[in-house]
Amino acid sequence: MSLNTAPENNCGQMLSEVILDGHSLTIADVENIAFGAKVKLHERVAKACEASREVVEQFIAHKQVAYGINTGFGRLANKHIDDEQLQKLQRNLIVSHSSGVGDYMGTEVARAMMGLRVNSLANGFSGVRIELLQALLDMLNHGIAPLIPSHGSVGASGDLAPLAHMALGLLGEGEVYYKGNVVPAAEALKAEGLEPFVLAAKEGLALINGTQFMTAVGGLALARAGRVVKAADIIGALTTEAVLGTDTSVHALLHAVRGHECQRQVASNMRRLLANSEIVASHKGCSRVQDAYSIRCLPQVHGAARTGYEFACDLVQRDMNSVTDNPVVFPVSYLEEAERGQHPFGLIMSGGNFHGAPVALALDTAAVALCYIGTISERRCDRLLAGNDGLPPFLVVNAGLNSGMMIVQYAAASLVNENKVFAHPASVDTVPTSAGQEDHNSHGPTAAHKLTSIVNNLELILACELICSCQALETRRPLRSSPPLSAAYTAVRQVVAPLEGDRSPHPDIKAARQLIASGALQKAVEDVIGPLA
Image: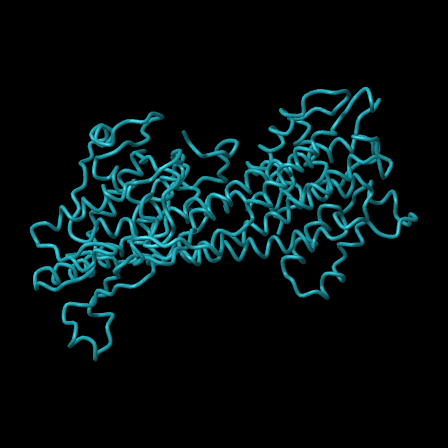
């Protein structure tokens, strides 16, 4: 079973190819890899990998002891392993750590993980052969994606269990997605003319010490959220028109005197969205002094949510382009002159770059931020249905006989409540592992799962508001919406008919969600006024 609960493949404009160099990967690139883009290595990666691999080979040849190369793992780090058992040590690491549980993630998560792990290794500080990176890319480019159980990682010492399942497929063991089916990994590799990979010293550990599960799941959620935060401004503007809200509250002077750039961006979006609206112009100078907070404070709330979202994207992208391995391998050329005499082969340092704390914090922050958008959207939805502002109760004729949109708001309310639960941070807790050796864990994977659930719910909450706002606009005819909002309304009406009497709202909510999630609503607007902030 797949945990991909997005309505369908909502990836934006696909790139035909993504080049991995260890430094420049973006969240958009990861989404493209997840949904099928071809991937290749930058030409400079091979030289960097060769340099760090030579350090590992020299350590082995000169009987130097280094964690994870010729020792056991975790609490067993004091156990020395003989040279003739080093290959077996790496395979044993992969199979023993393939202990994930729960439903399987979708192919897009597995593909994102593979691309992310290659990108981290491409920095050239992991001591692995270039052949290992190419073997992972061969699987990606031949459409082979390992089955990754959803749970089992605590987010420190790397996403050990999920990444071990990823590596298992590379070894020709376990099961993979291939051509729409689940098949044995060995069978899929053989069908594509690929050989199971044989790990050398350090390479198994290099595959599983990293944050690539949490950054894959969380990064894909953030990619979707990027479309949602812009759709929220569009939908909020439609509601502002529908409830006869004023555009005074988005005046540039108001927002210039408060020092939050994202707030200013939202206010700018709202001004552009509401410009030349016959509906807004129709009630200029009316007796209403000010609008409710859900209308008047939209730039402040959406802006704060954007600030948290952008913070999260920044941290996650930094981690996507980081060395999250342990130990980390430094060729002699990276050492200070004084260190070179002490470490003639280079330096292999054991540290904690695998710890997911930065990513966990980022994803928990994004979770709280996106909840803001959901809570204010539900309040606007309720306002549309309350029979105020000259709108019919529940936006339907003959209310009483017809319930209209009444229960649409119930759906939004239930999802808002669920998001409040999901917004509780995972990263403030820790459960020790490995007999106390690994005594502080990030729980970033839990944060990633929660964020995905919040984005799923937020798409639906906004869909509820969207169908209600468009229905409310029916009562404002013959006055017309602004040109960009007219385009948004038309996009909705192509998939959701006006409500004339009771019918099931479920298909309408589903169709509206797809407009939001796919970016089609945003595109309809931007085709008229250009890119939104």
